[in-house]
Length: 501
Image (cartoon, rainbow, N blue to C red; front, side, top):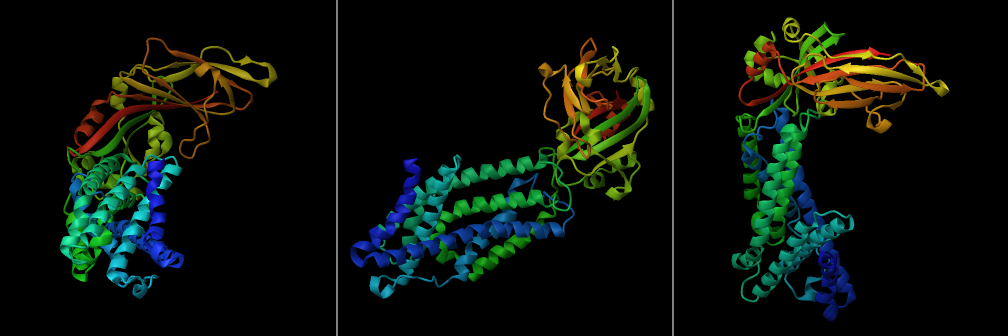
């Protein structure tokens, strides 16, 4: 803890060490005030380094028909967002070309350029030091990066000050004396930041399909913000000294033009490939009543990123033709698949929004399965003291072939059950339904499941059953095979039925 708090101690002691022996306490306060101005300027630069790429990402999406163009080519994200992030970091230096010094240059007998560089450096150093201490006080483990940046900045500043006797202030050689000691730190931040961006980009393909209108923008905004943050890590330590070389209108125009060009070219890149596939969830839903009666069969589809199902069908015309839909499909033209229909894979279904379902033939289902999953009473109800009653049930998986999981969604005033040492779990809520108790039974066995439910009310108990079978019927397997190579389809059958006791 002492080591990580040392940079903050140095930041507060520096004004006293630099000014108090010669010019007194008043000059110390003026120096510290300039350091605070430098800190605010650096914090503003970091903020703009994040805001600028986010703004460019949002503007691009307003004129584009697809998001996540960088998903299959991660380097494209750097090309798109790094120039705008650098431009954002240079904006404060452009706005405040004349740094508002509180210190009196004539009294200190130092050049204004030297005092401005000093204020900018110690302001940036103080910001990283305070962030390090904040991480430490909050009990987080992310303060090592800012601590390393502070430590290397201090070494680089010592090298810079010692070299001022040999080189002219503002010269390239003097600037090199500051940058060279920072090279190990810059290499570390670039290495760490690159891996962080690659990790975030990979996870954006499975973060879920968030509801409109903001769900379409969120992945690009997150990646743009992370790249802006990483850019500020990588450039921030050298910015106080080299900003006077970079903060020129010609360089700023070049960065902004590069950003616009990169965003325009990004629309030519397809978001997905075989190495970075689009993930689609395909559920063959069979609603049954009893052991052999089929009420409805549908093909349900969901995605887990911001490019919606119409995007998939637009670029998979064979699938669209098989489903008898237009490739320019809209959500208003088809039926929506609700959360309750994905109960078999709850809580994964909470990642879905705006799912679609299409009618399917039930003849091949009847040909493949002799008996469907069903729930029956195997004993008469038992009345207990206090008005409670116990219901004895038997659950059969039917003739399913490759059972993955069976889910019982129990709605009602349940007081106990025979599962989990008679301890009820916390009620869950699926979609717009009432809070209910969910029990998951994994795999298949030779015998049926037998259990009891206890309720302290005369009201009926509703049980929704969903059984996920990894086996696909012939028609469903053919439909899955029609998807292009850049789509990774997770397909299964789900048998859904409802009972009231």
